[in-house]
Image (spheres, protein in one colour):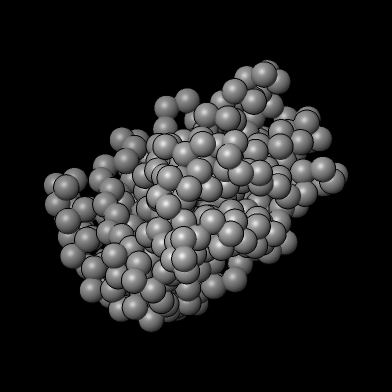
Length: 344
Ligand code: KG4
Ligand code: ZN
C-alpha cells in the first residue's frame, strides 16, 4: 500500500510517501520558522495561510521525488489533531478532497501517535510494549505503549511542555525561535556548573513534570546578570543555556527511568521535537545502559514535525482496514489515551 502523509498541525508543512513494502519513498518538510520567529512564537492565522500556499506544491514535489503520479496513491493520511484548528483544517481539507477525487480512502491520524511511532521508520525498531517519553512543543508525557493505539498516560506536565519551556526561555534571552535547538547550540560552549538550576519534582514520587518554575528561575538569572538593562554577555548566556539544558534533561531522564522501573519494562522510546536534543540522547544512552535497558529514537528530522511519521502511522491503520469519513472534522484537543487499538 502506498500512502501520502500530510502533516500541518503547527508551523511545518510535512509531506511524505510511505510504501508498506518498500518503506519511505520521499519526504519533504517546509518550516515556517522564519515567518514566526519575529513574534517569538507561532501566530496561528499566519500558519494556516502559509500551509495553504505550500501544501499543493510540496505534494507535487514529493510525488516527483518518487517518480509517481497522484493516481499511483492507494490512500492518504493526515494529522487530525491535536494542534492549531486552522492549520489542521488545511491538511484535512486537502487530504479529504484529494481522496474524494482519486476515489481512495483518507485517514485522520493523531499527531502524537505519529511521533510515538516515528522510531519504527529506523533500522532496529522497538517492539511493544515500551515506555515512551513524548517531548514536543505542546506535550511532555510518559506513555505506556502496549500496542499501536493502546496507550496509557502515566505522567505529564502540569504546566509548560519541555519544548515550550525551551522556546519561552530562548525568547527571553533574545535567542531565535524555535528555541530548543538554539539553546542546545549555545549550551555547547557553556559552563554547565556555573549556575545552579533545580530539577523540578524529581525529589517527589510520581511521573508528572513541571517546568514553569524553571522558567521563572532562569528569568531571574537573566535579570540578575544583565548588563545595564540589556541582556547578559554571550558567555553568560551560554552558561545559562548549558545549566538549563542539563536541568531539563536530568529531569526527563530521572522520570523516564522511574517509569521503566515501576512498569517493569526495559525499552524506552523518546519522540517529539525535544527528542532530537543531543544531550538528552547521550544521557539516556548511558542511563539505560547502566540499568540493562535500551533507548530508541528516530533521526532528528523524524523527531521534529514531519509527514513521514503520519504516512507511516496512517499506513499501519489503513492496512488494518481503518478509514475516516471525508467530512472535515479536526480535533485540536485530543488525548492520546482516547485512541483505539489498531484495527478495532
Ligand atoms: O514535535 P515538534 O516539532 O512540534 C510539536 O509537536 O510541538 O517539537 C517542537 C519543539 C520546540 O519546542 C523546539 O524548541 C523543540 O521541539 N526542539 C528542541 C530541539 N529541537 C527542537 N528542544 C531541545 N533540543 C533540540 N535540539
Ligand atoms: Zn510535533
